[in-house]
Image 1 (cartoon, protein in one colour):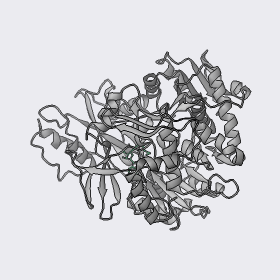
Image 2 (cartoon, protein in one colour; image 1 turned 90 degrees about the vertical axis):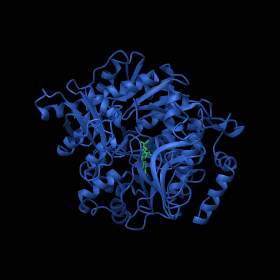
Image 3 (tube, rainbow, N blue to C red; image 1 turned 135 degrees about the vertical axis):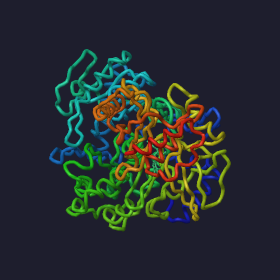
Image 4 (cartoon, rainbow, N blue to C red; image 1 turned 30 degrees about the vertical axis):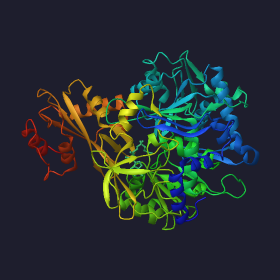
Length: 634
Ligand code: WT7
């Protein structure tokens, strides 16, 4: 237990000196069918990392059944629908158990077996979490795809991991919109002959086109048995795949395994947020709310697994922060007396811009802890959040982590370690960050800046990228041999506190969502009139980063406005609206080196408006290209 800053320092030191002992103590708090024989076995060259070797258990037994003897009536989720006029749903741990087992049995009846991949393309309704847990219950591997991705992005993900079945709903509400997501699935399945069945939850009542593969959830799940013995899994059996963008190529399927992910998400949830006494229904009235979507890692780790493993009560919110107006978050906090609130800087900035009149009507006095995740939080937004939402009494935990890390890595511990605006602050126990220079030499000491790496494994480190282990090695372990490379730049200040400065690779962070420049370029290039394109991120007041696209089209293309609209439509079709360019500049050429490499550094500077100092342009094949680009900049 960490109670003071001194405790943290002491526990941190011990966790580094003897990681095995540290993690054994934590892992011993779970229910294991058979205890592990070795705590960690690893090398970062292949890479090959195993935690809790030979341990046998089931994560859902730990997330659900374990809580039933004392807390079957405790709320697991309070579901708040998209519309404030809709009806909330309360899901107790007992309800969760029954729903998950019924769905697990249904999946079994549909032929899903241990190790099979199941795609989940669903809105933010409790059934999405039931779906994840039902897979875990029977040892199937879930691959949740954010329901804002297009049919072609969905198809690519289904194909890559060869999913046998897709779980979806008829439609999804997002603010004022009613999105027919079943039809997106139908479209995707034209390219996915391997999918045998589609289980569709009727949610919005939208008219759908039923095919012979379709089964309506409500027709089968309620009739299945609410008892389903958990499949006994090995620690290193796959738990899920989650696709994320990198600097090159198509999104990668990040693989997490059962044991390490369970131990790490629960431990970090409990440690960072400090929701004491979670397992006691009578003494704990805390309510956690993570506003992410389950389609992202934040939703996996801190809506589904972490809070449930810890026995917490959480809000599950279907809607968006600005519907019906920019007071919705504050309204929900007031309504459910949320104590621990976890959101993204982009949402904070958007709600700040809307004005304090949206905050004023609500009582936010239940709040104890505020969290931030997904992108660097600028000082202005931090202060606004601290003053107007936390009323200067709630610590802000700025949590740095990644899809590949599975859980929070660098963060303040609420109420225990110091916070500092713009700083993720200190590594959690067990985490060994180091900064390196371009050549991979460690940069020691304080008041320094470098590339952020981690030098020792933690339980939920990425194990592989699905179907392509070499890609996992190349992306994370090859740049600096012997280290896990995060892709982020980072400062360590005079106190040893860490401040993430943003990606140092060709990955953008748009509203806290990770998008590869290469992916957007490839989507733009698929427009018939596009010769070539280059995409960079640029500072955006609300989104953190916006997407700036430089596009070469033939001189015969006359109507540029029309073309830009078509390019946006193309990106929407191939990836989804989250990847659509904010600015498109039509150019005649791109700055390239003599070897034909695009000099993104220059394009980034122009997009940022930093044209006075473009750096060395002498190696360019044709320096006049830069002049033209600067002149035409948007
Ligand atoms: C990238 C990972 C972690 C869940 C959501 C995003 C950036 C994340 C922070 C933070 C500064 C942050 C990094 C990281 N990032 N949290 N607190 N401060 N930057 O997961 O999609 O895998 O993206 O998000 O650049 O590498 P993701």
